[in-house]
Image (cartoon, rainbow, N blue to C red):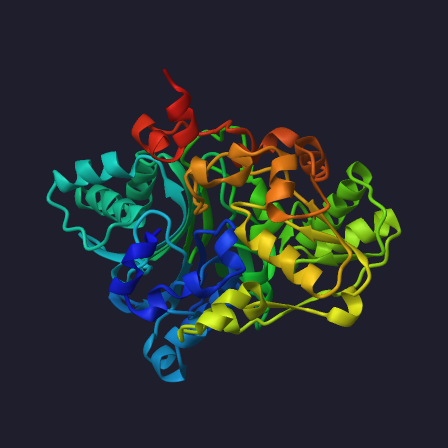
Length: 501
């Protein structure tokens, strides 16, 4: 992330995320990836709509690379998908295979040069790589590749993965052998869609921390070749009419060509550790995981939250949009009526025009506007998915009281976030996480609510109805499933460092 005092050094489009008073206090997902192998189709257009559906996973930059034989067409810029592409640009991105990406920076700053896909030259032609996740050994891998005189253009871990594949290709390996060799050098979280002149690769790290699904486009006639799609979430398949086939398994590589889909196990699967925040917040509620929509899971954690933290109140409201399913579940279980108390302005947060001082003082009203006639004289339960720093929560509570709420009780559909993430979520260092330094009662006092309760860690995991050991919940526990090098760990675990004699 860019520190606040460097924002003026970059175009407004690169720092627009800082203008959003609501998401500024949320954990941010790294990226959305998309790939399609569909000879005869307008693959760039399909990728555009796939990225459009995955826009929630990253709003800083977007890019598409297409392969027309050995020729690669690439367009990527800072901004939203709808800002980066138009019909003219898409018409120039011809080919049978496309790789797309929408980005939120984690490793590598928010600059145009770091937009993806990353494209590098190899002995067998160019490859284009789109990455969701974050490596923990980026520095070591980068240094090893620099010793081999690879010419880095960016500061991202994604380019390091691309050059690791290129190095193995240049040593005489096939695309698949080179990719498997490179993946074994990578430590951390990575879900990848990779385009080559000969086919498309999809893979996930051995723990499967970030999601990646496979879909198929409808066949026009029986016997036609199957055309495959890769996407971070199933909503990226739905928008283009593709059918969900299955997830890419942790430690699996899929190689998609004219001959079909080949599956290669390049690593023994470790204990699967899907990021639990994908379930709670990051993925769209209409995306499917574990054979059900995430909306259903979020309803359940709302019901569980009500069972764990009952309160006398008149209405239940949500922080839109991410808190809505859990708030509905809370209402269903508690019997307290659900109402819309906050209306979200979905466009103000991406403006490049600086607000006036008066508007800045109004704060959260730029993004959320309270309904005074709904809230006046009411005891309100407000449900949100998380509290990271607490700054936004305090503004929301003040807005509710200013609108006439006589009591405000906040309920959070996840446990307290006490540790930073190293696997692709852009979180603060530990000393900036409010739950790492304050008790629940102290947080309640700081954000000025009448009561505050979080969902229990056990309740969160049990509600998945899956093996509770198959999720990464390190941001709540500090139990990191993939070893983090000490220098990187010390850069974010400020409190533990300070406590060490």
